[in-house]
Length: 376
Image (tube, rainbow, N blue to C red):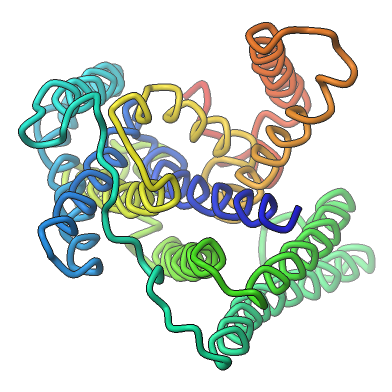
């Protein structure tokens, strides 16, 4: 069970990282990208092919992220001056072109046979008694920082509600969080404690999967922190202004095209890093592992958590993979269906959940209705 939960944390972390790139492009900037998996494909293949040639893993990941950003640059230069519809169409085509190149250019990617036997990070960690305590200490530090941030938000939310109840002026036009969001914050804290406990148990008997889990969560935390800082910076505020009405941003002297290009490139680089982790987790990749469905899984995660909210993307990833896991074990016991029908039923149920969510909270679980980008 601990091994399975470790894999679940790894998948949730990878797709949270993947979704953060899409959330930057669409949630903050309003760029409709239906080919996000292309950036992941570039990052995954670049990392493993370079590492097979003897390149250091860290350098291979950096080059993979750079090439993914370069792909975003090429796509953006050709489409960002056009309407959003063209960007959506072009990104779908680009993702399929990248997948078909990986399938047919066997001299480069080994084609449908796939690639395996490539170097893995932390796979050769020495069997020393200090490894597990150090790993658990790092794990504790990551979750401690996350818990501290959650506590600060919770304390500020309670203070805002108390001031609103007393009729005091808070100096801001933002509405205080509702009781539902406060309850959700408490549930998130309990979920974090559960993940921390499972991860600590897995790290005590340190192995490759445990080390990869620690590495994924550490990189995810770093990327999340940096995106939060960027979102509050003048650069992030310009992106939000472009999302709301790019003509106003242009009238204020902002180079809208350049800002969109930066968002597309940075989101693509983040997806490229997620592709590296995806390849390391599977230990074998082929073109069939990068189908368009992965893009729409990322869209599901972002919409579920709330577009424009990085914390919502993390929550959406955990909920999405939690649902996938539970239905894999629970539904076969309740419904006498074969595997094909069961898979179709699971997709139908998650589609129904999204429809209900769009009717109840079209902005997503943690999204803000005033920042809703759907339908604009």
